[in-house]
Image (cartoon, rainbow, N blue to C red; front, side, top):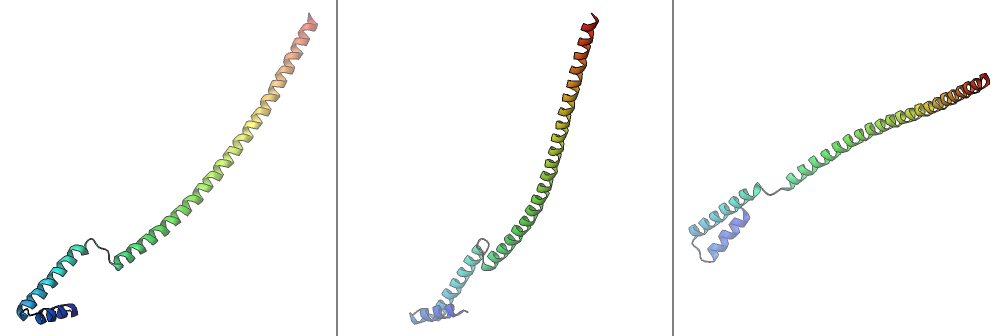
Length: 122
């Protein structure tokens, strides 16, 4: 019997309740408290429960931070590779433009020479 139960028993006896009846009331009170505690124990969190949850959450956040950092590094590498490919494609396009201009000028020159040659023959 806890100190509260003893104090309650003494208070009931001093108030004129028969000792056996006072003991029954105290036992009933203790059972009622135990029942309420067991009902609420499933839905209430203790300090230990909160500490465990906090620890698990901290670990999960740390794991997430590690994964995000790794993914970010991979994405940056992928972006750098994509930028390199884009630069290479721009270079190829510029070379193709130069080649097209050369071939166009060569064709125009050849066409002009043919036209001038044909007009001299006539």
